[in-house]
Amino acid sequence: MIPPVLPTYNRAPLTFVKGEGAWLTEADGRRFLDLGAGIAVNALGHAHPALVAALTEQAEKLWHVSNLYRIPEQEALAERLVAETFADTVFFTNSGTESLELAVKMARRHWHAAGAPRHEIVCFEGAFHGRSTAAIAAAGSEKMTAGFGPLMPGFVHVPWGDQEALRAAVTERTAAVLIEPVQGEGGIRVLPEESLKGLRDLCNQMGALLILDEVQCGMGRTGRLFAHEWAGVAPDIMMVAKGIGGGFPLGGVLATEGAAAAMTAGTHGSTYGGNPLACAVGLKVMEIVAEEAFLAQVRATAGQLRQGLERLVAAHGDVFEQVRGTGLMLGLKCRLPAAEFVTSCFAEEVITVPAADNVVRLLPPLTLTREEVQEALRRLDRAAEAARAAARAA
Ligand SMILES: *Cc1c(COP(=O)(O)O)cnc(C)c1O
Image (cartoon, rainbow, N blue to C red; front, side, top):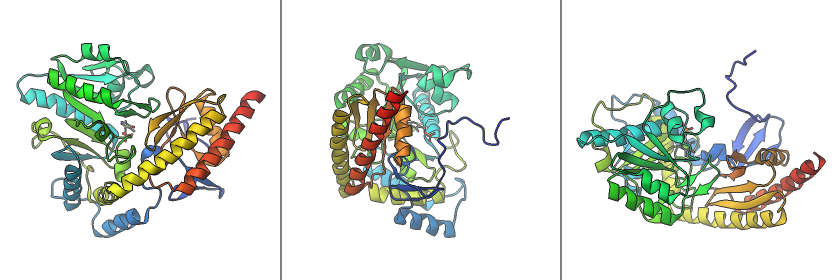
């Protein structure tokens, strides 16, 4: 019999009832160290006092009014995002998937308004942009698209890291190139800075727009506010979500005036997108994460965790192959099945997240302390021992 909740998820048998910082309490009382952060969502950990205060203060004032009216919290968050990034304007959504939808619409509409329609979006194998019909067409993998056809046309796929295929795919039919600066679901694959610069040049040459999906790698995760800042180049359009709401559902599309100008009144909308509650929390997240001292702390924590993980991999060469990633978006490429290592981690009361390419992801709260990094490394070490023992026994 089908359960009341549609069983589209492979859920672990864990029920968390309380969260505090990087710690989650299970219904049975066990305390787990959270290196998943709700898949890079709880950027400031659980129940951050400043976010709780922002949320409750706004909840007592006003929850929702609709985008038929001005929303000061939304305007304040947009102004802050514009001040801190390449963008001239922001549209707020509730999720990464909705941000993808608008990014595609915006790129196509841009060319329509220019009087020279282009509709092709060049995407990359291993990409993840969400689960709507457009988003699965953008990802293109059999796993996500099987049975959901006909797929939305206009998406072209290029193997990750294949410069020649990329140059061949970007033509005067290309409306935009869409890429994650660090692939998350695809297995923590970092786009090298040189490649992102090269991609920007290629887009400029062909007149194509560059859309960056920073839903997972943005909002301080790499130690800069947004991952593309490391390469010193800017996109035309950028998708955000996950960390920007710190756990409250919030997403957005940031764009330059040139890319966004065709999105005039009536061309797009959202009932909930950018409502007062979401934006009050989002503004507080931004105020904390955009501080240079906070980002410097993220880089320091990341360095400490990375060093520890390199030692872990060296000590358990039969369990792990390598450490991947950047900042606090790290992956352990496994030799044993990654899912088995994640299960061993649960037994040691540490939460990790599986990804494609047999990688286990570490996406801890950006507020992880030095002591918590040491504790995480001890737990991961014990989980590696247990995973090895389990593999031998099998
Ligand atoms: C999670 C994710 C999405 C989809 O976001 P949802 O909020 O789940 O719709 C899109 N792109 C990337 C890179 C993601 O990690």
